[in-house]
Length: 171
Image 1 (cartoon, rainbow, N blue to C red):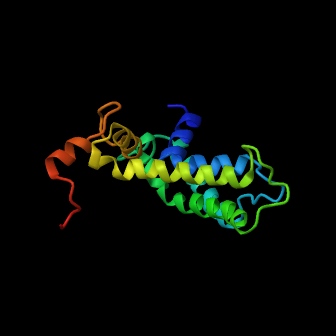
Image 2 (image 1 turned 60 degrees about the vertical axis):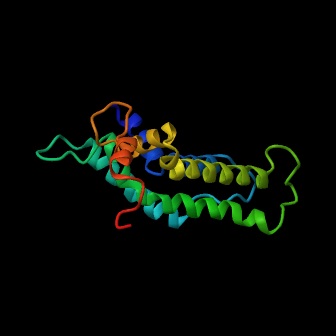
């Protein structure tokens, strides 16, 4: 497993792909001159996560469980807060008043931020409600996030829902 590929996989699937992609898109795409960049709040969580990822994945093999690899994407799930706050910081100034240089094209900052937010919402809705519809897409995203079983490209999500039902625990 190559380190950069593992980094990309864990980065994407720590937030079920949509939020990390939105974060990456809006931080790289300069939609307007005063576009906020990741600030102290974001970096204070991103840097320790990157250090943790680097140390755990480049360390020599040790006895016991290996806390590294593709199945550890869920370890970085708390970074969704960074992605969500940054997405809100990008969208918030645009909802107050349109910038003078907003333009009317496809790269209108308000339109780009709104489309990114809508894509994140639709993706997350597909993943959250996917188990009700036995969605193969939701099952794949679930497998990439948890990845703890040995069955290649297959999650046990649909099987477990068939065995245990679709009600939350305790109901």
